[in-house]
Every structure is written in structure tokens, then in C-alpha cells.
Amino acid sequence: MEQYRFYALLSRMRYIQRWGLMRNTFTENIQEHSHMVAVLAHALALIGREQFGQDVDPDKCAVAALYHDCSEILTGDLPTPIKYYNPAIKDAYKAVERVSSEKLLEMLPAALAPYYRPLICEADDAVRAVVKAADKLSAYIKCIEELKAGNAEFESAARQTENALRQMHMPALDWFMEHCLDSFRLNLDELE
Image (cartoon, rainbow, N blue to C red; front, top):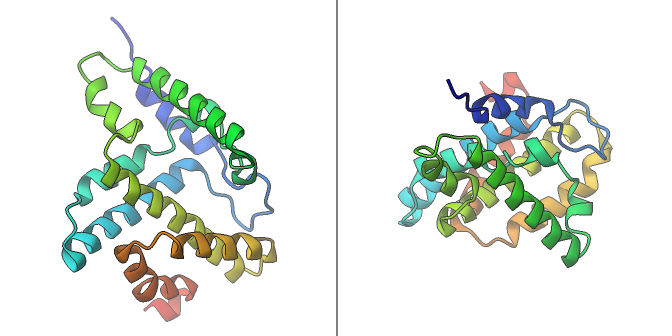
């Protein structure tokens, strides 16, 4: 009986740590990160659809977000300053991600691979834009949480990430940042 390793390999996302160059108050792995990005992508798409009349499916965005970093199971998480250091490195890393994604797809039964391809390879432009915004928003929330815990290591990352979010000019993202983001600065008692 043939065994397909795709799902077992995905379960190893919890071993890939993010923010490797930063001192963290608490660690974050790509499995945890992917869950938060899925929650945020769903929210951004829903806000975009219901508040701004955009034609994007929240469910598709959430599912794509669950898989948006799965290639890192094979590549590891390359820190952002390295990944985007120059165009050549960025392009080379994108090529490595594509090879990793293809390798993961090969670990599925042939009948299932076409259903995973648009998720893993982010084929839909509208979905990709929402997932990218949610990914950046998740990084900013991580910075907020680290700063809230007194970790000044994240000050520069917080400024850069907030600036990148504001430059996206996405109405749903702007709405979320205005109406939801400050809540992440509250403690549990304040949230109730």
C-alpha cells in the first residue's frame, strides 16, 4: 500500500521557528503563525467583502493562508533581512520556494494534488494579496506583543512593518488597523 507523506510533513511545521535573528520573549513557529494568518486573512477578506464590496472569498483566503508557508518545512524560515537583501537573493529564494512547493505536491496522490496546487502556489491574485496583507499583519501583531512584554528588540521591526502595512493601501487592512489593532495592546482584564 502506497503511503503519502504530505500530511505527516505538514505536521512538522511546528518545528520551524520564526524570527530566528531576534531575541524573543516567546517563540513562534510556522504552524502557529499560519493559524493566525488564516484567522487574519479570513477577517480581512470578510471585511473587504462586507464593508467595501470587494469580490474575494474569505474561506479561500483562510485556507490559502494555512498553507502559505508550508514550503518552509523543506527550506526553513529565512529571515526577512536576508530574504529581501537584494533582488538576486529574493529571486533565488522564490525559486527555492517553488521547488519546495512542487516537492510537497509530489507527496500527494495525483488526484488530490490539483486541489492543493492553488493553495500552496498561491495562484489566485486576489487571494494572494489578502494572504500577503494578513502575513504582514501577523508579523506586526507579533511585534506589538513583544513590545508589550518589554522586549525592545522588536522596536525597529514594528516601525518597518507598520510602515509596510500602511503602504499597502488596502481598505480592509486599514479598517482592521483602525478598529481592531489596538486591542492587541490590551491585557486579558482589559479585553473583557
